Length: 193
Image (cartoon, rainbow, N blue to C red; front, side, top):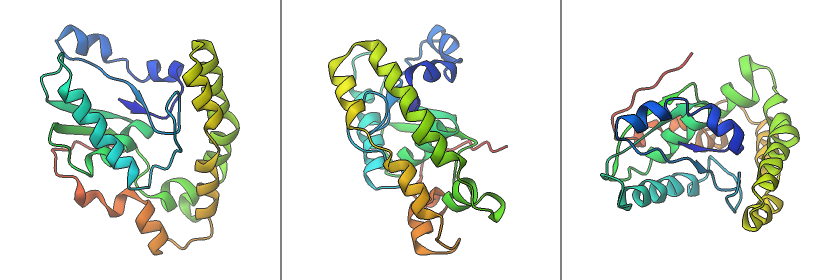
C-alpha cells in the first residue's frame, strides 16, 4: 500500500492486513514522495511518480522476507498509486487491484460533471496536509518533522492551475491516468463505483 494519507488513516484502509499476514503475506505501507514522512514534492502526474513506484516495488522484492512477487491495490489515492506505479512495469510487480481512483483529472477532480470543483484541492491544502503534520509530530522523528516542514501545498496549486484547461487539452492528457493506462502490462482488476 502506498499512500498520501497520514499514518492514522493509513491504518483505516489496511483492514485486510491481519488476514494477509495470517496467510503468509508481508504488507508494506509507504508514504508518497512529498507526503507523510517522505521528503520531496508531491506530483502524482509527473514521470517521477511512476519511477518512485518502480523503485519501491523492486526494493520490496529484494528484501529477505519477500518472495519477490509484489501486488498492489487500494481505494481512492491508493488505487491511483497502484495504477500509476504500474505504468513503468517493475518486473517484480505481478498484479494490481486499484479501486475508485481518479483516472481523469478533469472529470474526477477539477470539473466533476462539467462544473468547476474546488473542494479536493482546498481540502488537501487546508485539512489533509496539516493532519499529516500532526501525525509526524506525534512520531517525534526529527527527519519526519523536517520533511513535513518542507512539504508545500503544490498539489493543491496544481489542481487549481488545471481548472481553466479544456477537457481535451494536451495538459489534461499528460496529467490524467486515463490517457496512459495502456502503459500498464500487469494483470489488473479495476473497481469503480
